[in-house]
Image (cartoon, rainbow, N blue to C red; front, side, top):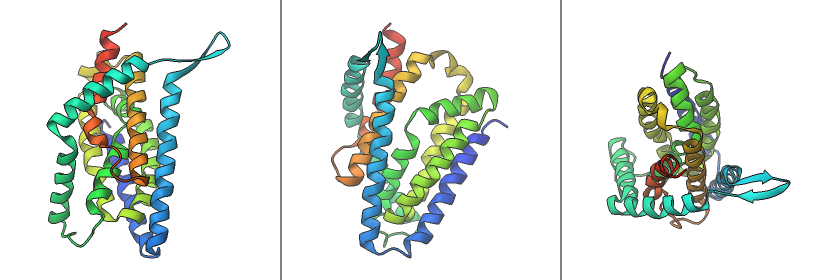
Amino acid sequence: MIGLGTLINVACILAGGVAGLFGRRLLVPRVQETLMKATGLCVIFVGLAGTLEEMLAVKDGALTSGGTAMMIVSFAVGSAIGELIDLDSRFVRLGKWLKEKTGSEGDAGFVNGFVNASLTVSIGAMAIVGAIQDGIAGDWGTLALKGALDAVIVCVMSASFGRGCLFSALPVAVIQGSITLLAQPIRPIMTEAALSSLSLVGSMLIFCVGVNLIWKGTFKPANMLPAVVIAVIWALVVP
């Protein structure tokens, strides 16, 4: 069944979020703060690992790096586009709208939880590659694995931020569902080089989210999201 992978991923996020909310009741604020920083540290290393995996290679017995020019151009152009359309404020407004519609006005961490959790589970190569596999061959294995990882992340985040993290399932459903539906048309442009560039830039964005969990307001990862599109274009244009 095409689309099953996204449904599994969404269900895992919701399950992890609910588990985190139940656990939150047992945790004092200082433990919640520690959990949030611990999650941030883990997200930082997930981002670092993905970035270094794509940048570093062993060639003739020596460690080499690549992708620097693509990375700089993608983030420079992508961030400029993101700032012009101000994606960050749009995420925040969506979070505030959800907060109001769900009667969560008393939940101070709702918006931060929604934004940070959404960016953490929506960005990355697994989301893109898994959705394409699901759309082309009905192979939902990658998204099921991603769902298991997302469940753990959202569980810990929900214990710190609250119910806003559960609504990170919405952008995951929209983004991955759309890619699954468009998998056949976009298949020719998702070359190995394009996926590698996407993974590098996506991992760097995940790193930025992790930093924000520890040092609030350091980056605006949502405004950097267009860098992912620029990275794919770069891979298709530059040999």
